[in-house]
Amino acid sequence: MAGLSLRHIDKIYPNNVQAVFDFNLEIEDKEFIVLVGPSGCGKSTTLRMIAGLEEISAGELLIDGVYVNETLPKDRDIAMVFQDYALYPHMTVYDNMAFGLKLRHTPKDEIDRRIRDAAEILGITQYLSRKPRALSGGQRQRVALGRAIVREPKVFLLDEPLSNLDAKLRGQMRTEITKLHHRLATTFIYVTHDQVEAMTMGTRIVVMKDGYIQQVDSPQNLYDYPINMFVAGFIGTPQMNMFEGEITFNKKTAKVKFGENAITLSSKVVERIPESQRFDRPIILGVRPEDIHDDEDKVAEFKDSLFRGKIDVVEKLGSETLVYIAIDGKENDVIARVNPHSTIAVDTEVDLAIDINHIQLFDPSTERNIFMEEYVAPQVEEVVDAPAEETVEG
Ligand code: ADP
Image (cartoon, rainbow, N blue to C red; front, top):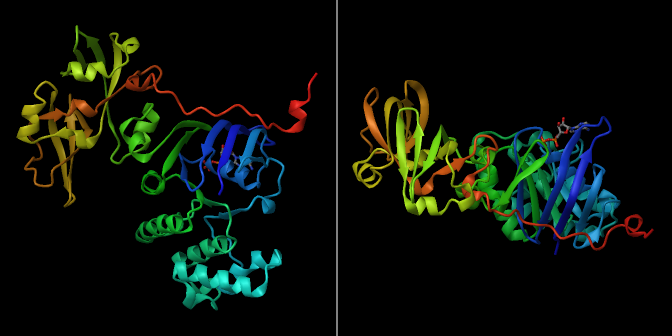
Protein backbone atom coordinates (compact mmCIF):
# COMPACT_ATOMS: atom_id res chain seq x y z
CA MET A 1 0.00 0.00 0.00
CA ALA A 2 1.48 3.33 -0.95
CA GLY A 3 -0.30 6.55 -1.66
CA LEU A 4 1.67 9.76 -1.97
CA SER A 5 0.74 13.34 -1.22
CA LEU A 6 2.69 16.16 -2.78
CA ARG A 7 1.59 19.41 -1.21
CA HIS A 8 2.64 22.85 -2.38
CA ILE A 9 6.08 21.60 -3.39
CA ASP A 10 8.65 24.05 -4.75
CA LYS A 11 12.18 23.37 -5.91
CA ILE A 12 14.72 26.14 -6.06
CA TYR A 13 18.23 24.99 -7.02
CA PRO A 14 21.24 26.58 -5.29
CA ASN A 15 21.84 28.74 -8.41
CA ASN A 16 18.36 30.23 -7.78
CA VAL A 17 16.74 28.44 -10.72
CA GLN A 18 13.22 27.56 -9.67
CA ALA A 19 12.45 24.27 -11.40
CA VAL A 20 9.11 23.40 -9.74
CA PHE A 21 6.33 25.73 -8.56
CA ASP A 22 3.57 24.80 -6.10
CA PHE A 23 3.25 21.17 -7.20
CA ASN A 24 0.10 19.59 -5.74
CA LEU A 25 -0.91 16.01 -6.33
CA GLU A 26 -2.60 13.19 -4.44
CA ILE A 27 -1.46 9.84 -5.81
CA GLU A 28 -3.45 6.80 -4.82
CA ASP A 29 -2.07 3.37 -4.15
CA LYS A 30 -1.47 1.34 -7.36
CA GLU A 31 -1.85 4.29 -9.70
CA PHE A 32 0.36 4.61 -12.77
CA ILE A 33 1.11 8.33 -12.81
CA VAL A 34 2.98 9.80 -15.75
CA LEU A 35 4.68 13.19 -15.53
CA VAL A 36 4.94 14.52 -19.08
CA GLY A 37 6.08 17.77 -20.66
CA PRO A 38 8.84 19.25 -22.79
CA SER A 39 12.47 19.07 -21.73
CA GLY A 40 13.26 21.32 -18.77
CA CYS A 41 9.70 21.54 -17.42
CA GLY A 42 10.66 20.06 -14.03
CA LYS A 43 9.62 16.39 -14.40
CA SER A 44 12.91 14.81 -13.31
CA THR A 45 13.34 17.31 -10.51
CA THR A 46 9.92 16.32 -9.15
CA LEU A 47 10.74 12.62 -9.39
CA ARG A 48 14.12 13.13 -7.74
CA MET A 49 12.48 14.97 -4.85
CA ILE A 50 10.14 12.00 -4.36
CA ALA A 51 13.16 9.68 -4.38
CA GLY A 52 14.98 11.88 -1.90
CA LEU A 53 17.82 12.60 -4.33
CA GLU A 54 16.97 16.31 -4.32
CA GLU A 55 16.01 18.37 -1.32
CA ILE A 56 12.46 19.78 -1.27
CA SER A 57 12.74 23.59 -1.02
CA ALA A 58 9.19 24.13 0.26
CA GLY A 59 6.06 22.06 0.73
CA GLU A 60 5.43 18.57 2.08
CA LEU A 61 5.86 15.09 0.73
CA LEU A 62 3.94 12.29 2.44
CA ILE A 63 4.20 8.59 1.65
CA ASP A 64 1.34 6.60 3.12
CA GLY A 65 0.48 9.63 5.20
CA VAL A 66 3.95 9.87 6.74
CA TYR A 67 5.94 13.08 6.31
CA VAL A 68 9.18 12.10 4.57
CA ASN A 69 10.82 15.37 3.45
CA GLU A 70 13.85 14.61 5.58
CA THR A 71 13.83 10.82 5.24
CA LEU A 72 16.91 9.37 3.52
CA PRO A 73 16.37 7.84 0.07
CA LYS A 74 17.20 4.35 1.31
CA ASP A 75 14.53 4.58 4.01
CA ARG A 76 11.71 5.69 1.71
CA ASP A 77 10.93 2.21 0.37
CA ILE A 78 11.15 3.46 -3.18
CA ALA A 79 13.07 2.09 -6.18
CA MET A 80 14.15 4.19 -9.10
CA VAL A 81 14.95 3.14 -12.67
CA PHE A 82 17.04 5.53 -14.71
CA GLN A 83 17.39 6.21 -18.42
CA ASP A 84 21.02 5.08 -18.54
CA TYR A 85 20.33 1.84 -16.57
CA ALA A 86 23.20 2.56 -14.13
CA LEU A 87 24.32 -1.08 -14.01
CA TYR A 88 27.70 -2.07 -12.56
CA PRO A 89 29.73 -3.18 -15.61
CA HIS A 90 32.04 -5.58 -13.73
CA MET A 91 29.19 -7.52 -12.08
CA THR A 92 26.98 -10.20 -13.57
CA VAL A 93 23.28 -9.57 -14.04
CA TYR A 94 22.65 -11.70 -10.94
CA ASP A 95 25.05 -9.66 -8.82
CA ASN A 96 23.69 -6.39 -10.16
CA MET A 97 20.26 -7.48 -9.04
CA ALA A 98 21.51 -8.81 -5.70
CA PHE A 99 23.61 -5.77 -4.83
CA GLY A 100 20.97 -3.60 -3.13
CA LEU A 101 19.57 -6.57 -1.18
CA LYS A 102 23.01 -7.62 0.09
CA LEU A 103 23.56 -4.08 1.40
CA ARG A 104 20.32 -4.49 3.33
CA HIS A 105 21.53 -7.85 4.71
CA THR A 106 18.66 -9.75 3.13
CA PRO A 107 19.20 -13.53 3.68
CA LYS A 108 20.91 -15.26 0.76
CA ASP A 109 18.12 -17.67 -0.09
CA GLU A 110 15.59 -14.84 0.01
CA ILE A 111 17.80 -12.84 -2.41
CA ASP A 112 17.98 -15.86 -4.69
CA ARG A 113 14.22 -16.38 -4.66
CA ARG A 114 13.50 -12.73 -5.45
CA ILE A 115 16.04 -12.59 -8.29
CA ARG A 116 14.69 -15.76 -9.89
CA ASP A 117 11.10 -14.52 -9.62
CA ALA A 118 11.98 -11.12 -11.11
CA ALA A 119 14.09 -12.68 -13.87
CA GLU A 120 11.19 -14.96 -14.73
CA ILE A 121 8.75 -12.05 -14.95
CA LEU A 122 11.16 -10.10 -17.16
CA GLY A 123 12.31 -13.04 -19.29
CA ILE A 124 16.01 -12.64 -18.42
CA THR A 125 16.65 -15.89 -16.57
CA GLN A 126 19.06 -17.08 -19.27
CA TYR A 127 21.21 -13.93 -18.88
CA LEU A 128 21.74 -14.02 -15.12
CA SER A 129 25.41 -14.99 -15.39
CA ARG A 130 26.24 -12.48 -18.13
CA LYS A 131 27.89 -9.09 -17.70
CA PRO A 132 25.90 -6.02 -18.86
CA ARG A 133 28.14 -5.41 -21.87
CA ALA A 134 27.07 -8.77 -23.30
CA LEU A 135 23.41 -7.63 -23.36
CA SER A 136 21.38 -5.56 -25.78
CA GLY A 137 19.87 -2.22 -24.75
CA GLY A 138 16.47 -3.78 -24.16
CA GLN A 139 17.96 -6.57 -22.03
CA ARG A 140 19.92 -4.06 -19.96
CA GLN A 141 16.77 -2.07 -19.36
CA ARG A 142 15.07 -5.27 -18.15
CA VAL A 143 17.93 -5.86 -15.73
CA ALA A 144 17.54 -2.30 -14.45
CA LEU A 145 13.84 -3.01 -13.92
CA GLY A 146 14.71 -6.33 -12.27
CA ARG A 147 17.03 -4.62 -9.84
CA ALA A 148 14.12 -2.38 -8.82
CA ILE A 149 11.60 -5.24 -8.60
CA VAL A 150 13.71 -7.39 -6.24
CA ARG A 151 13.61 -4.62 -3.67
CA GLU A 152 9.82 -5.04 -3.52
CA PRO A 153 9.41 -1.29 -3.04
CA LYS A 154 6.19 0.53 -2.23
CA VAL A 155 6.73 2.89 -5.14
CA PHE A 156 8.51 2.56 -8.48
CA LEU A 157 9.99 5.72 -9.96
CA LEU A 158 11.00 5.55 -13.62
CA ASP A 159 12.87 8.41 -15.30
CA GLU A 160 12.66 8.18 -19.12
CA PRO A 161 13.55 4.47 -18.92
CA LEU A 162 12.94 3.83 -22.63
CA SER A 163 14.60 6.79 -24.29
CA ASN A 164 17.81 4.92 -25.12
CA LEU A 165 15.95 2.20 -27.00
CA ASP A 166 15.00 2.15 -30.67
CA ALA A 167 11.39 2.80 -31.68
CA LYS A 168 10.35 -0.85 -32.03
CA LEU A 169 11.83 -1.95 -28.73
CA ARG A 170 10.36 1.11 -27.04
CA GLY A 171 6.93 0.00 -28.18
CA GLN A 172 7.50 -3.52 -26.79
CA MET A 173 8.90 -2.32 -23.47
CA ARG A 174 5.97 0.07 -23.09
CA THR A 175 3.60 -2.88 -23.15
CA GLU A 176 5.86 -4.86 -20.81
CA ILE A 177 6.01 -2.08 -18.26
CA THR A 178 2.21 -1.76 -18.36
CA LYS A 179 1.93 -5.53 -17.74
CA LEU A 180 4.50 -5.29 -14.98
CA HIS A 181 2.44 -2.61 -13.30
CA HIS A 182 -0.65 -4.87 -13.36
CA ARG A 183 1.32 -7.80 -12.10
CA LEU A 184 3.10 -6.02 -9.26
CA ALA A 185 0.05 -3.92 -8.33
CA THR A 186 2.26 -1.17 -6.93
CA THR A 187 2.34 2.59 -7.41
CA PHE A 188 4.34 3.67 -10.47
CA ILE A 189 5.49 7.23 -11.18
CA TYR A 190 6.93 7.55 -14.65
CA VAL A 191 8.65 10.54 -16.29
CA THR A 192 8.72 11.03 -20.05
CA HIS A 193 8.71 13.81 -22.66
CA ASP A 194 6.89 11.45 -25.04
CA GLN A 195 3.14 12.00 -25.10
CA VAL A 196 2.56 8.60 -26.71
CA GLU A 197 4.21 6.87 -23.74
CA ALA A 198 2.16 9.03 -21.41
CA MET A 199 -1.12 8.31 -23.17
CA THR A 200 -0.57 4.56 -23.49
CA MET A 201 0.78 3.83 -20.02
CA GLY A 202 -0.66 6.32 -17.54
CA THR A 203 -3.81 5.80 -15.52
CA ARG A 204 -3.47 9.53 -14.87
CA ILE A 205 -1.22 12.00 -16.59
CA VAL A 206 0.28 15.15 -15.13
CA VAL A 207 1.09 17.63 -17.92
CA MET A 208 3.82 20.10 -16.91
CA LYS A 209 5.25 23.24 -18.47
CA ASP A 210 7.88 25.65 -17.11
CA GLY A 211 7.73 24.08 -13.64
CA TYR A 212 3.95 24.31 -13.32
CA ILE A 213 1.31 21.59 -13.52
CA GLN A 214 -1.02 22.42 -16.40
CA GLN A 215 -3.59 19.65 -15.99
CA VAL A 216 -3.99 16.29 -14.29
CA ASP A 217 -6.43 13.80 -15.73
CA SER A 218 -6.95 10.44 -17.43
CA PRO A 219 -5.50 10.11 -20.95
CA GLN A 220 -8.94 10.29 -22.59
CA ASN A 221 -10.03 13.34 -20.62
CA LEU A 222 -6.83 15.20 -21.43
CA TYR A 223 -7.42 14.46 -25.09
CA ASP A 224 -11.10 15.41 -25.07
CA TYR A 225 -11.03 18.27 -22.55
CA PRO A 226 -7.66 20.02 -22.68
CA ILE A 227 -7.67 22.98 -20.30
CA ASN A 228 -5.50 25.23 -22.45
CA MET A 229 -3.73 25.50 -25.80
CA PHE A 230 -0.54 24.01 -24.43
CA VAL A 231 -2.20 20.76 -23.31
CA ALA A 232 -4.29 20.65 -26.50
CA GLY A 233 -1.17 20.96 -28.65
CA PHE A 234 1.02 18.65 -26.57
CA ILE A 235 -1.36 15.69 -26.42
CA GLY A 236 -2.20 14.05 -29.75
CA THR A 237 -0.36 13.54 -33.06
CA PRO A 238 -0.69 15.10 -35.54
CA GLN A 239 -1.35 18.14 -33.40
CA MET A 240 -4.70 19.81 -33.02
CA ASN A 241 -5.32 22.41 -35.75
CA MET A 242 -5.66 25.96 -34.46
CA PHE A 243 -7.66 28.48 -36.52
CA GLU A 244 -7.37 32.14 -35.51
CA GLY A 245 -10.67 33.94 -35.84
CA GLU A 246 -13.53 35.79 -34.23
CA ILE A 247 -16.59 34.45 -32.43
CA THR A 248 -19.95 36.25 -32.46
CA PHE A 249 -22.96 35.02 -30.52
CA ASN A 250 -26.52 35.23 -31.81
CA LYS A 251 -29.54 34.34 -29.72
CA LYS A 252 -28.78 30.65 -29.32
CA THR A 253 -26.09 29.90 -31.87
CA ALA A 254 -22.69 31.40 -32.60
CA LYS A 255 -20.54 32.05 -35.63
CA VAL A 256 -16.81 31.52 -35.83
CA LYS A 257 -15.15 33.37 -38.70
CA PHE A 258 -11.58 32.56 -39.70
CA GLY A 259 -10.04 34.04 -42.84
CA GLU A 260 -12.44 33.58 -45.73
CA ASN A 261 -14.39 30.87 -43.89
CA ALA A 262 -17.14 30.93 -41.29
CA ILE A 263 -18.85 28.11 -39.42
CA THR A 264 -21.96 28.08 -37.29
CA LEU A 265 -22.03 26.52 -33.84
CA SER A 266 -25.39 24.95 -33.05
CA SER A 267 -27.30 25.75 -29.87
CA LYS A 268 -26.22 22.37 -28.53
CA VAL A 269 -22.56 23.40 -28.75
CA VAL A 270 -23.18 26.93 -27.46
CA GLU A 271 -24.96 25.51 -24.41
CA ARG A 272 -21.73 23.79 -23.41
CA ILE A 273 -19.93 27.16 -23.20
CA PRO A 274 -20.30 28.61 -19.68
CA GLU A 275 -22.64 31.63 -19.82
CA SER A 276 -19.96 33.97 -18.52
CA GLN A 277 -17.89 33.14 -21.60
CA ARG A 278 -20.56 33.82 -24.21
CA PHE A 279 -19.39 37.19 -25.57
CA ASP A 280 -18.02 38.29 -28.93
CA ARG A 281 -14.22 38.36 -29.19
CA PRO A 282 -11.16 37.02 -30.99
CA ILE A 283 -11.00 33.24 -30.62
CA ILE A 284 -8.84 30.28 -31.54
CA LEU A 285 -10.80 27.35 -32.88
CA GLY A 286 -9.13 24.02 -32.09
CA VAL A 287 -9.99 21.01 -34.28
CA ARG A 288 -8.36 17.58 -34.06
CA PRO A 289 -7.25 16.13 -37.44
CA GLU A 290 -9.79 13.29 -37.17
CA ASP A 291 -12.64 15.79 -36.77
CA ILE A 292 -12.14 17.17 -40.28
CA HIS A 293 -14.03 15.11 -42.85
CA ASP A 294 -14.12 14.90 -46.63
CA ASP A 295 -16.80 12.23 -47.13
CA GLU A 296 -20.23 13.14 -48.47
CA ASP A 297 -22.20 12.02 -45.41
CA LYS A 298 -20.25 14.20 -43.04
CA VAL A 299 -20.22 17.14 -45.43
CA ALA A 300 -24.02 16.87 -45.48
CA GLU A 301 -24.27 16.37 -41.71
CA PHE A 302 -22.05 19.37 -40.95
CA LYS A 303 -23.18 21.64 -43.77
CA ASP A 304 -23.02 24.64 -41.42
CA SER A 305 -19.40 24.04 -40.55
CA LEU A 306 -17.66 23.63 -43.88
CA PHE A 307 -14.48 25.33 -44.93
CA ARG A 308 -12.84 25.50 -48.32
CA GLY A 309 -9.27 24.33 -48.78
CA LYS A 310 -6.76 23.27 -51.38
CA ILE A 311 -5.22 19.84 -50.93
CA ASP A 312 -1.40 20.16 -50.82
CA VAL A 313 -0.29 16.66 -49.86
CA VAL A 314 -1.99 13.29 -49.34
CA GLU A 315 -0.14 10.71 -47.21
CA LYS A 316 -1.55 7.19 -47.35
CA LEU A 317 -0.55 5.31 -44.20
CA GLY A 318 -2.71 2.24 -44.80
CA SER A 319 -4.92 2.46 -41.73
CA GLU A 320 -5.51 6.17 -42.23
CA THR A 321 -4.75 8.96 -44.66
CA LEU A 322 -3.28 12.29 -43.63
CA VAL A 323 -4.21 15.26 -45.76
CA TYR A 324 -2.35 18.60 -45.67
CA ILE A 325 -4.61 21.45 -46.65
CA ALA A 326 -3.98 25.09 -47.58
CA ILE A 327 -6.62 27.60 -46.59
CA ASP A 328 -6.50 31.23 -47.62
CA GLY A 329 -3.36 30.43 -49.61
CA LYS A 330 -1.33 29.23 -46.58
CA GLU A 331 0.38 25.95 -47.46
CA ASN A 332 -0.04 22.88 -45.23
CA ASP A 333 -1.94 25.01 -42.79
CA VAL A 334 -4.34 22.30 -41.71
CA ILE A 335 -3.99 18.54 -41.24
CA ALA A 336 -6.90 16.14 -41.55
CA ARG A 337 -6.90 12.43 -40.74
CA VAL A 338 -9.41 10.90 -43.12
CA ASN A 339 -10.69 7.48 -44.08
CA PRO A 340 -7.96 5.37 -45.77
CA HIS A 341 -10.28 4.80 -48.71
CA SER A 342 -10.84 8.50 -49.30
CA THR A 343 -10.42 9.50 -52.94
CA ILE A 344 -9.30 13.01 -52.07
CA ALA A 345 -6.78 14.22 -54.67
CA VAL A 346 -3.81 16.58 -54.53
CA ASP A 347 -4.22 20.07 -55.98
CA THR A 348 -8.02 20.02 -55.86
CA GLU A 349 -10.17 22.59 -54.05
CA VAL A 350 -12.69 20.95 -51.75
CA ASP A 351 -15.21 21.61 -49.02
CA LEU A 352 -14.23 19.95 -45.77
CA ALA A 353 -16.51 19.49 -42.79
CA ILE A 354 -15.63 20.22 -39.18
CA ASP A 355 -17.39 18.04 -36.60
CA ILE A 356 -18.49 20.88 -34.32
CA ASN A 357 -19.34 18.49 -31.48
CA HIS A 358 -15.63 17.96 -30.82
CA ILE A 359 -14.17 21.42 -31.31
CA GLN A 360 -12.30 23.43 -28.68
CA LEU A 361 -12.36 27.22 -28.31
CA PHE A 362 -9.45 29.09 -26.78
CA ASP A 363 -9.21 32.69 -25.66
CA PRO A 364 -6.06 33.97 -27.42
CA SER A 365 -5.11 36.28 -24.55
CA THR A 366 -5.23 33.63 -21.80
CA GLU A 367 -4.83 30.55 -24.05
CA ARG A 368 -7.48 28.88 -21.88
CA ASN A 369 -10.25 26.67 -23.21
CA ILE A 370 -13.48 28.63 -22.77
CA PHE A 371 -15.54 25.39 -22.56
CA MET A 372 -13.47 24.53 -19.49
CA GLU A 373 -13.56 27.86 -17.66
CA GLU A 374 -15.62 26.33 -14.87
CA TYR A 375 -13.36 23.28 -14.56
CA VAL A 376 -12.04 23.02 -11.04
CA ALA A 377 -8.62 21.47 -10.70
CA PRO A 378 -8.41 18.67 -8.11
CA GLN A 379 -7.78 20.30 -4.73
CA VAL A 380 -5.28 19.10 -2.16
CA GLU A 381 -6.15 18.99 1.48
CA GLU A 382 -4.53 21.51 3.73
CA VAL A 383 -1.73 20.00 5.76
CA VAL A 384 -2.83 18.66 9.11
CA ASP A 385 0.31 16.80 10.10
CA ALA A 386 2.82 19.54 9.31
CA PRO A 387 6.43 19.33 10.52
CA ALA A 388 6.97 20.45 14.09
CA GLU A 389 8.60 23.82 13.42
CA GLU A 390 5.58 24.94 11.45
CA THR A 391 3.05 24.05 14.09
CA VAL A 392 4.77 25.90 16.93
CA GLU A 393 2.43 28.56 18.18
CA GLY A 394 3.30 32.17 18.88
P1 ADP B 1 12.86 17.80 -17.18
O1 ADP B 1 13.06 16.54 -16.43
O2 ADP B 1 11.42 18.16 -17.35
O3 ADP B 1 13.59 17.84 -18.49
P2 ADP B 1 14.43 18.99 -15.07
O4 ADP B 1 13.65 18.69 -13.85
O5 ADP B 1 15.61 18.16 -15.36
O6 ADP B 1 13.45 19.02 -16.32
O7 ADP B 1 14.89 20.52 -15.03
C1 ADP B 1 14.02 21.58 -14.71
C2 ADP B 1 14.80 22.88 -14.67
O8 ADP B 1 15.73 22.86 -13.60
C3 ADP B 1 15.63 23.16 -15.92
O9 ADP B 1 15.58 24.53 -16.17
C4 ADP B 1 17.01 22.71 -15.53
O10 ADP B 1 17.99 23.42 -16.25
C5 ADP B 1 17.05 23.05 -14.07
N1 ADP B 1 17.96 22.16 -13.33
C6 ADP B 1 17.91 20.81 -13.27
N2 ADP B 1 18.86 20.31 -12.45
C7 ADP B 1 19.53 21.37 -11.97
C8 ADP B 1 20.63 21.54 -11.06
N3 ADP B 1 21.21 20.47 -10.48
N4 ADP B 1 21.04 22.80 -10.79
C9 ADP B 1 20.42 23.86 -11.34
N5 ADP B 1 19.39 23.79 -12.20
C10 ADP B 1 18.94 22.57 -12.51
